[in-house]
Length: 422
Figure (cartoon, helix red, strand yellow):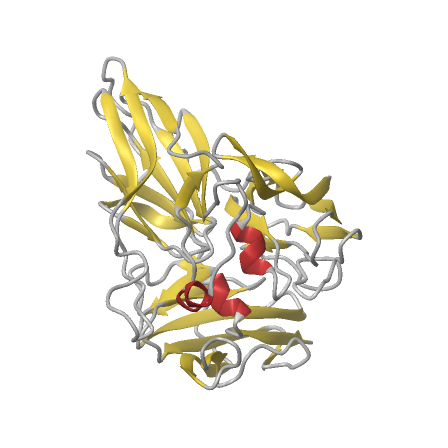
């Protein structure tokens, strides 16, 4: 297929200068199956460099695979060939640009899309509707132009005034009372943490970051860091209209102000409109095909430290670092032996939360997170806290990156490289 990145798309039902893949925000939903080869030509009609990252896919980072070091200049194109392994989990993923220096601006402007892997083990979910809810946020001025972020917004991690679901402002999701729907919620925001709640209902989570949980889990609130995905089962029990909201969430601060960036009040994302006579819903399976934790033959343990401190250039003297250094694409920060399993402890010494994301190689969270033991590709590292991860580097060699998925922090230097060598 062809993906063309260009400006001038409609957003929230109005003409805007949003950026889009193939003319729409979000871009087309890509569907692949285990064993497929995804061939995508990305054409750059923007006025700045771009590239493509298939977020969460366990695929090769080498060459024209999911390679964050590719640069597609304005007017140029690049042919991606991404081989999806035959044993890849079926689930919810997404795609977005990842050219360092332009990532946050391009995603804030609308360059995102959903990517679903179909097939795989069928747990027998009795769903009547399977919906993608890709959540983004942005800020538009009176002329419909995407607003630029100021210095403080970048340091905090910008949060847009307009929160959208599939490019729409507060859309209505219709359902028959008693019907079972699967909502694939993708947090495609630059910095905003989503704390999801559905009025009058609990959310039954069945998957996180593209893989099933061990069992369905009923939640009053489902928290998604930027980049996270959650598949939830929704079963309206009675007719009515129920708001899907993101509740206030305190990401921390830089010590210069009180409260967190998301502590202003709930944001309505969409409305569930249920109608009809209530019927009994089919039961969910008691167990789900969750990936097992890799065995404990760990070859190496590392500590990775996220920090915010004084000494940065151009941002009021603030430095956003990993292990005391800002990003350098030419430097190998971690060298890993192919075929090994490692444990990384990610330490956050700063007063803000940072979502840790590793490309190409998903990990199991062992400690320090509510979903310990679950495979993920983004995990929130609490302010002045840590998480411990088990990472199998057992199949793909190649060079890629890990970073804070508050994308403004990544752009300010909070990213590093990993090189997996035979």
